[in-house]
Amino acid sequence: MMKTLQVELAQRSYPIYIGADLLLQPELLTKHIHGKEVLVVTNETVAPLYLQKVLDGLSGYRCESVVLPDGEEFKNLTVLNQIFDKTLASQFSRHVTLIALGGGVIGDMTGFAAACYQRGVPFIQIPTTLLSQVDSSVGGKTAVNHALGKNMIGAFYQPKCVIADTTTLNTLDDRQLSSGLAEVIKYGLINDAEFFVWLEQNMPALRNRDQTILAEAIERSCKDKADIVAQDELEQGVRALLNLGHTFGHAIETGMGYGVVLHGEAIAIGMVMAAELSHSMNWLSADDVERIKNLLRAADLPISPPKELSSEQFMKLMSVDKKVQDGRIRLILLKAIGQAVISDDYCSTKLAEIVTQ
Image 1 (cartoon, helix red, strand yellow):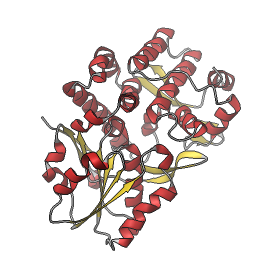
Image 2 (image 1 turned 90 degrees about the vertical axis):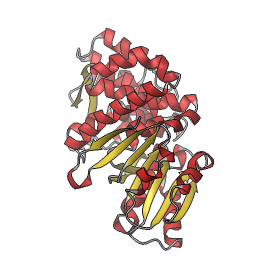
Image 3 (image 1 turned 45 degrees about the vertical axis):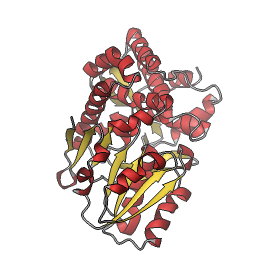
């Protein structure tokens, strides 16, 4: 059964479709394409699996595709230019629709290309990883990485729709599935304690790819995110809560080299570090810190920062972050499971201790 959620953003509102075999329902896609030109952007891993299915549903359109290399290390301006090369060589007008078919890297890059090409063309998200289905495809954040910082070059640009076909998760490897589960757990921590308890009860089924349980986790995650995005599209306030663990995690990804530690793995470590700092402030109980660690372990995610990063490197990398304000790193911390806050009122010495553990 397909579920439909709405991201409420006035004239930029759009639906999220969640269900099995949605790639076999091309009408979901075509009703959001208003011109006759389409460029499908995908990668070398996803293309052999799903590109032809998407193209088969686009008869009657002038379609082209571009297949990018797969991996976070390719999320940069150089590879982004391949999308522009294709749109320009195909002489696509500003009525072209770009379709992102892949994980978070493809979604972020395609969305950023759509925001830039001829100053903005429509795009559609077809996320094929758990992480992209529950997080990066929803909310309109688009970006590429720079050697000095993750996602520092980008734009807020909303898709016309999101089509989350849960069947695509059957071809996802276990490590990527676990990476996506980190972002699912995040929603339970920031504002949905009931969901956190549900995850504690259902993690084995999620790891075993139970389709009904996966669909429910995706729906609840997307609803939690859509509700926050509707309140704060451009991250001027409450939307920053969605970055729990991300300041720590982005520093790990940048410091270790993009792609060495998966995004969800880095965020899992970052959430533990945020929980430990929150505990040091007498906000979060020791029992709750242990519950968080146990759930992340159950999802087969790491909970300790890499030894290769020194405290000096870690702090320097954290300072190159979009949440730095007046030279002070603002962090997302936890008053309790299900209650996140934005704060720069923490002990810098305690922070330094935590990044060196």
